[in-house]
Image (cartoon, rainbow over all chains, first blue to last red; front, top):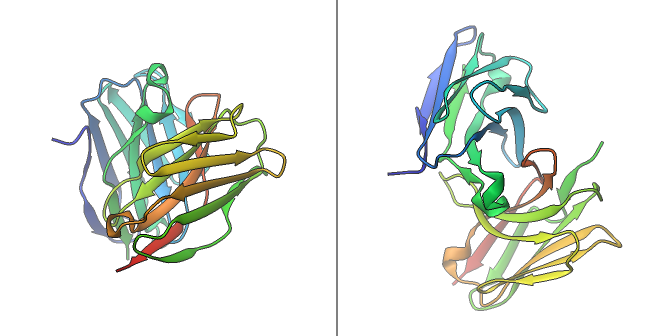
Length: 114
Length: 112
């Protein structure tokens, strides 16, 4: 089983719909992140959480919200999806005690907004 | 603003040759610089990192060079294999909490 699992893997939704992307991890890491990747570009940080009570905005948080339901779960919501939110979304986890090599990404969710 | 970028979007090499992928960065305060490999349909995978107080680090078939004078990072892959075909990203680590700033990626294509 994957250490960081994202669901769904692929999703097509209509403009204006609310959609939730889910991430769960078995690594026991306190820190979790949501990134967005557009074609030809690197990943950009949307939101991050250092523990269950902690939520922080990243570089591109507008139009998104998150929920850290438990240490192992971090979900990303698009309240009203728009076409320019079509992208590949990655969840990641880290533990600062393990160093940067312990930063682990999920396999991604490909979201298309039509 | 601060950014991490790459010089070449696509690199094509012959199997068995050495590959060099380059990256320019602008945030001299970063503590770590990292190289990731991303294969189609997968998330980025850690390859190697280097601390800002080092100028060279070697792994298995890979070497990362850091030139802080010109803010340049490179990844060298020895004896490139078809399995090395992927997109490679450099990233820098924000000390404030493991946040990563990524460059735009270089696609490495290995010709048999």
